[in-house]
Image 1 (cartoon, rainbow over the protein chains, first blue to last red):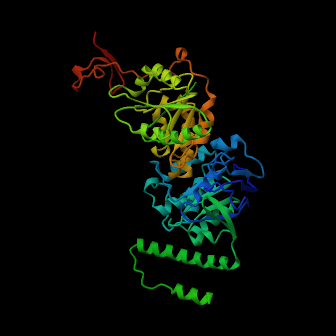
Image 2: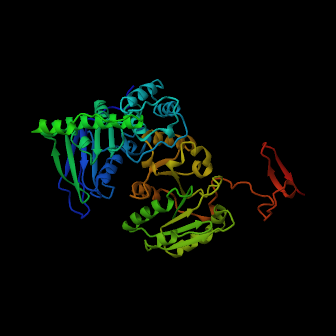
Image 3: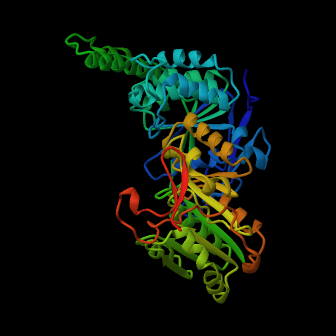
Length: 268
Length: 233
């Protein structure tokens, strides 16, 4: 059912920073199934990097970067034909605006992508694994909460959009199991780039690209210690999500495990 | 001289994307003149004049802005020729979605806002269906799925169109758009024709009637039940 051949490598090279200087990291290569973080202060060029990848830039964007897929220059067709688009995007700013039920919307999308309509159930099931509040097929799309929307977008990108490259732009406050969401996307053999300030996401990436003045200045490999921290952060994140659900249900939260001191003991 | 006519729904980002496009053209040394046709008021000429290129503004007032553009096309083209322009960009305020201001020899660009919902492409008409290029703006605030549905709907309405995803704030897509500007033939006023006929609007309301009751209306009148009659001599 997969409509796209998976991509083995994505490379980005030849960019300039905001001062017109050649960026310190002149070449980055990302392999299939890899999660790469993109971090840096506001205005450091994270979104421009993501936009370059989204457009499969060929020296024709303000950064003058060139993007290669499987070591090749993508064809004009691959760059512009929406049906051949190999990059999907997910961001904090995205909303569902269509006046339709979840089921109808997913079926319409499946039709556009020539994907089996049955996959809509699979999408909802996957989404419900990522959010605390279950989504039903008959729910109106526009009334979904932020968490439900984000979960549905992730599941839809995984199954229906099915693009081999996924760009995730700041989903930190989404109210979904972020860790699982990224795992899910990468698990489908996708190349995942995550723009983030959130340590939960940044540390689960194998590497992270550090941005400054519009350029890539450094690549940090996630250490073993960081991977351990990442596991703990994941637990805290899931715990926060449970609490969030309890608050939403009108429950009292009087007893919670003393996670902070438990963690302190562990790291000591 | 090449002619590019840009139309689109209000607030869709026509001017924003054109400002980026014109800046790119200037960087490449092209001589561009720009005309903005609006309805009641505009401050877009200020945005364009910051680019230091010849800018002309036309306000259609109570005349349909697309009709206004057509009546004035000869003057507009002459004005641009006098400026020594290689490229004339005309931006019009598309209003009722029934008109299409594109002429046969121009490059017709329709700018549409992706947040207007996946059913809107079905309602826009010739403005969209007779364009050469459709520029989709604000796609970054809707989900990937909705963006894909939106694109599919656009192609349903205009299968020949080339789609460009653009962002009026960052200028994304402007380079792709500009790359197409030189594709059209040189404009010839004498042989230019509209691609689509202007909508039917020959009634007493067009001539200033304000009374609502049926008896005051003459001309070609279409009733809500679908019947069309001609009232008058």
